[in-house]
Each structure stands twice: as C-alpha cells, then as structure tokens.
Image (cartoon, rainbow, N blue to C red; front, side):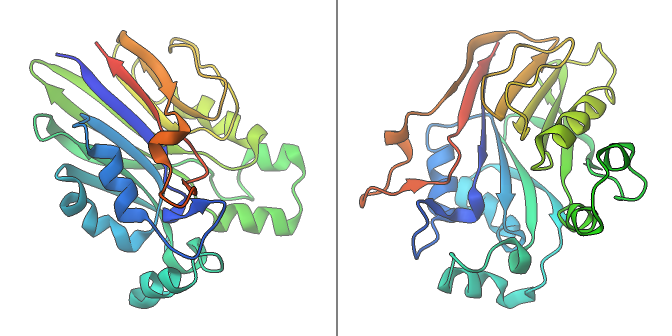
Length: 250
C-alpha cells in the first residue's frame, strides 16, 4: 500500500502578500481534502493544535516549539490583526496529521534542534552576537518524530522546522539525521531552511527548502510542489508563503 505524504509551512494561516484575514482552517482542510496519509505542518499557532483533528478528520500529534505569550486571547488578537501579531503572541508548533489506518506505535518525541545558544558549537563558531544568540534561544525549533505501523512495517515519520539561518539549519539537519538507526525506514519532511540540502543515505532533495526525504523506502511518485492555483484564494491572494510539497511513498 502506498502512502501519500505532504508537508506545508502554514505561515500561521496568513497569505502572501499578507492580507487582513487568517485562513488557517481553510489551509488545513485544503491540505487534507484528497485523503492523504501523512501531513506535516510547520508554523502552526499553538491555539490551533486542539482543533486540527476536527478540521482534518485525521489523528493529530503536535509538538510545541515556542510557548505563546498571549494566552487565551492570542488567537482572537491575531485574527483581528494578522499582519502585526504572529508567533510572539500565539507561539509556534509543528503538527503531524496521520490517516486513521496508520497505527501510532510508542510515544511521540520532540527533539530540540537549536540547543542553548551558549552551549552550541555552531553558535560559537559563527561568533553570534548576544542579540543573535538570545533570538536563537527564543525562537526554538523542533523536530517531532513518531513511529507508525502500516500493515506489518513500522516507519519513522519525522517533521522538522529548522532555524532560519541556513548555515545553522544545515548543521541541525545533519545532526538530526544521525539519531535514527540506518536500518529504520524513515520519512523525513518539513521546512529545512537550507536550500537543496542533501543527507547521506536519504533520497535526493528538491532545490528548495521544503522537503520530503526517504531512507529505506522508495517513491512511487517523487516530491513535487503544488501549482500556485491550488492554493489561491478568490481574491488572488496565495495561502502561505510556502508551497506544499507532496510525494507518494511506495
């Protein structure tokens, strides 16, 4: 049985160019309307994690990267002025949506990608300023990983959102790829924030920063980006500043 896998940075429900409205529920419903098996989201407001299952009809697993400062009012304030309020108030999370035919095995993991700014070899090597280090510490980035059983095989599915600095992001992704045994069939997807970054033992990346890579598995259809028409609103705006990437894993 093949798996339709999709990854999308939701940009907190905003459009490109930014408009005065959020479209988060519409984005989620658009991403699942053709019945995918795995959907990986990045830049999900924390307040929305509890609504993903109702919006999608799929099992949802969230991983909070940055805690919200706005509390219960965060969602309302952001909806009122999405251009001004974003992750500072709403926090930021990753989320994996899984088809109900996939069985979750074990406990989901959330792995911090950017360790403390004063303990990181990459930060020291780059000689980041105090302000840059504090910004890096505040904007936590995580990779969430689950094991799912599809018939008789167990697959690692991982969803990451790396640091926005591409050189630091490359180091984060390289370090992450070493965490799983090489014999474990793995689907690694998300926003790598490093263009065309290849990993030993994994499939070839796309030219952009949003990726679906596999190890120990084969593609039935290789990763590709959605055409812009598939995420365009009636007034011509585009949902998110990232295009979804999808692939079919054999």
